[in-house]
Image 1: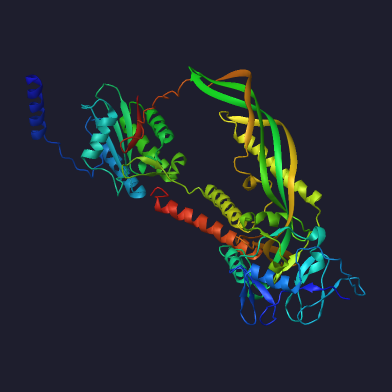
Image 2: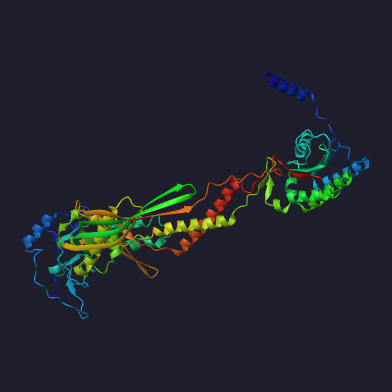
Length: 358
Length: 265
């Protein structure tokens, strides 16, 4: 028996329903009917699909290579998916396949922020990022590259953290004055103590090894007001991943960020000194809550001259980030032209200002 | 007050009706002090004309017993300007004066225009040395001057004045050389700064090490804020008094559009 996939079909014509970011609803691609989340859930409830209940583990059928095989709900074709994928597309008919056994138990996210930005938004943002970059290779923002943009729900851990911190610092007050032929410098040295505590809410750490942390950091923050109770319906039309970084591992990043910010806050409370050096710091960090959520990200991978460039756009806010490649020839030519131009400009200025003394 | 008024009135009538004696500026030798014989005068006139033709620079030989100015230099300047000596746009010329007003031989060499660049202080001293050899023999003194001046003119601009020019006021000004190296260095530095700025726009990804956006409002509580005085330390260093005026070395050789130098022989 092949793994069953979840699908959300139009109650009117049975075509696949896809989530629409701009409308925050579901639209049938065939008959153009539109449904809200409540309407979808009502339909699913009638069919007996209880989305968030625990389901019995389904037998995973593996092929000869040991890879999981799923059935496309639309055309019945076999869908191959690696271990971390929880939603994908059928390569034959293009319809979404939400892999239900990947969304159960500990892998069932508690919350999700639905996509607010469409693929077109992401493509426009990518082209915009490339503007004003004189050394960007021309072919980089070509249509065939931006067509590869994929909407992916990335697994994140969100942490609520409390930090109590204590710092000891050395502060110096420096005064100078002149008397006669001498300049005097008086330095008063102080021991400074600051204790304090603060709370942090929902510090995100990405739970997938496939997307590097710096890239996911750079598209923060997400607006958590838009967090919704998870429903696989939101995954329709997008890829999704499940976590492969355990919370206990991911937690370290969150703790470090919280500690650093707490020490910064205490440091900022010290005023009236010309120099402050922190000599000692002690932090007590406790994680009061953790959540496993899916957050929307538009991803683009481009290979250029043997190197892979990854771009990410926050699927909620539209923040697009990525390191752009540099066309070395363009950069070298620009540097030479700049140098010659500045030098000639200075020479001309010298002549116009009466250089030569004639 | 009345006395001062009449004094200035007298002076103004004096200058109004006094005349500057006209001279033949082509002669170039003016022996008012009667130090030279006629033959010496004629010989010197020839030599001076040769000098002028060769070097396109005016030369004037003067003697006087009647210097009403306070210095020989002032007399020389008055003589040069009143009779409009000097050749070319910059009125290039050299004047040699023997002033006998004091009873001594007060010798002065005056330069104007490009002659200031040719005859620097060292050369003027050299010429005065050459002249002093014949102290008392005025014909020889003038002759020595003409020869010495010619030999220096043949060498051109004095090495010490190679990087100068005579400005519109007739004074020496340094020639502004383009600071090539400085401009090259500045261009390089500015290019590097601009390139770093442009290249940095290609790098957008950075690791986040803070969580400032995730601080819960009103959750910051600072429970202890103390500071204890540990110690004080005072240092001093000598910076000296304000810079001295340095004194002004009178530019007697190069001021007001004239160069030159002189001595009592």
